[in-house]
Amino acid sequence: MHRIIIAISAALAVNAQAAQPGQDTERAISEAHQQMQTKVLLERRIAGALAPVKTLATFYAHLNDGSSGMSAFARLPSASQSVFIANLTFNEKGLTGFNYRVLEDSLSVEEAYSLLSMFGVQHTVGLMRGLRAVSANDLLILQSVSRLQNQGAVSPTYIRDLSDHQDYQCISRGTCESSGGRICTDNC
Image 1: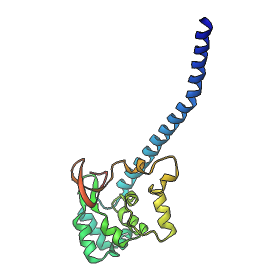
Image 2: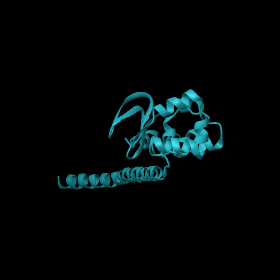
Image 3: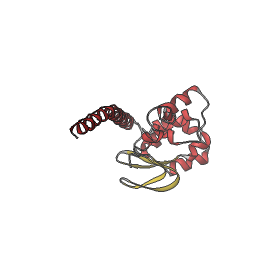
Image 4: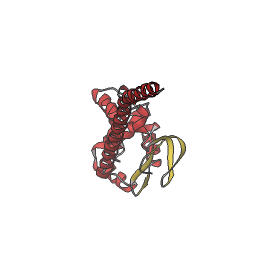
């Protein structure tokens, strides 16, 4: 009986040692996800802090001064410009929501990225499936905003789930409500 207990104890010790590498792998993946999330959130905070447009009034001011992102806005048909402006919402943190369908209908990935960088929410182009990808820059942008991240260890939804919500609108601080064609940003 004593030999059986020793044999079982030895087998359990071997199994525990064998399980350890799997646990280390899971811990490493979890730490990599946390580091990736921290990096993405920091990049978003920087983009938001450096964004020149944080209110509707500053958006109108940039329309008149010929800022680089405004050339993409000028490519939108007049009716789409009106819809885009009418659906812009802001709070003290900046842009909380916008209509993305008008961008998908008329702009390339690079153009939408340029326009949305004025607001510090250029990362949201990764949520837009209807944007035209016509250049090498378009593909680079798509890679950087995680649309193509399903190639790696991080799932494509992992980065997107940080707080931007497609087909939702910001209705009050921290509250997004279902609304087709809009994106509720993490500023909400």
